[in-house]
Length: 120
Image 1: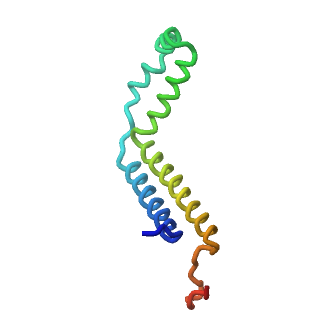
Image 2: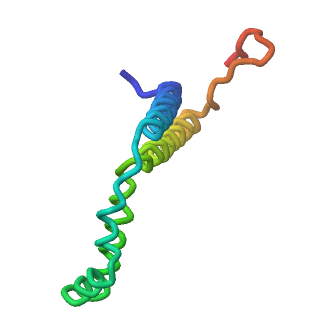
Image 3: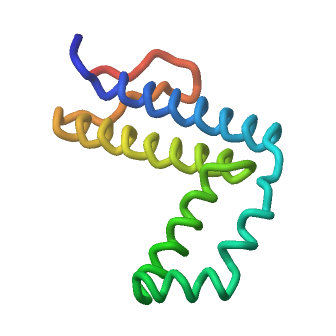
């Protein structure tokens, strides 16, 4: 089976629709994450201990880890899924566009007046 621009365009559209729909559903049904655990991680004592054992870079990495891990819980997961699907869809669309340009033909478009497609 040959990869054609039309198949890549269809895949980009399918990924976009499925990913955004899944993100909306996840966002709608997800509950807010428990904020109680983050209070300990934000305390000055915890930050001092991190800095004592690993230096300032350890504190920066701990903050980064907490921010990134928050993207995979609760309502933020829905937004993360939607954004990732948009990025993947854009990549597929770009690949289809470049493949169509390399083959020397623009992407096929249906005429707006409902007439027959143009001759090639």
